[in-house]
Image (tube, rainbow, N blue to C red):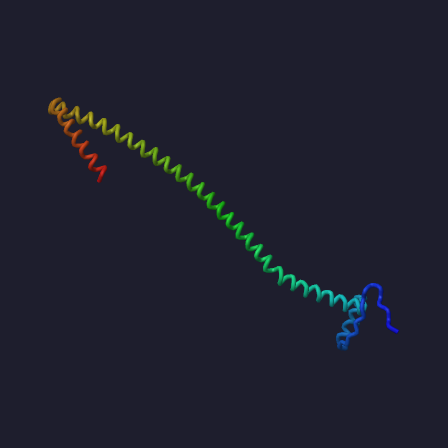
Length: 158
């Protein structure tokens, strides 16, 4: 007459193992109080979990790796863009400030040069007029003005 299976869905497993393995299982029973079937079922469940974990790892690792790589590339690109914008803003602001200061300095020097040349022109005219007469001073001034006017276009085109 066949034996009935227990209601919990368990099945019987008959195996031959070495005496050393059986002795180890008996020692574990004395230490932990686990019955033979509980120990063996625990070993099998841990092995199944490890095996399934390896399979899941092998299947999902490339996908996870790709997701991490994509995310890192995205954030790295964003950081580069932010850094580039920050550097550009800082550098452009400094260049604008330097250019403004340079332009102001250059404009001041040009104004001074124009003012000083006007003063020198008047002083020279007065000096020439006093030493050689007003007519000669007026003639020398007109001659110098015409020659300077002729030299300017040739220097600008060159």
